[in-house]
Length: 103
Image 1 (cartoon, one colour):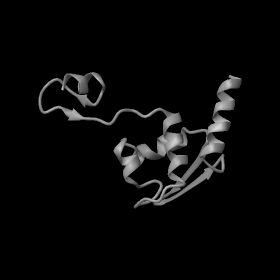
Image 2 (tube, rainbow, N blue to C red):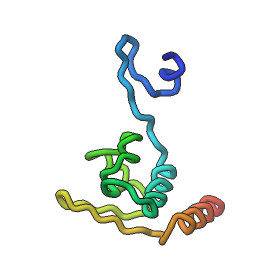
Image 3 (cartoon, rainbow, N blue to C red):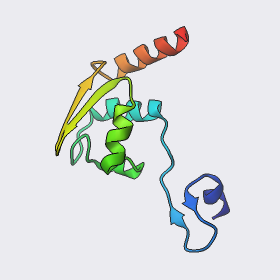
């Protein structure tokens, strides 16, 4: 329990403690989205078990997606549209690594 608390997976000081999903960095989230483009899974890109497992759901999802520079995310009601800056995961990795190297 103390290790989980130290790692940020639990919140509070009294039992039962609340389990929390760790904040996933933007680069990791972008990597996951580009990876999921090529993976078949049940659900949709905005409603799937992978994003749910890291706490990216509901209104939080839209906020996180809009913060990513490698995609453009739009939402009107229940309709979601993603415009991809890169055609695939390998292109994303090359482009993002080149930008970080130039910085």
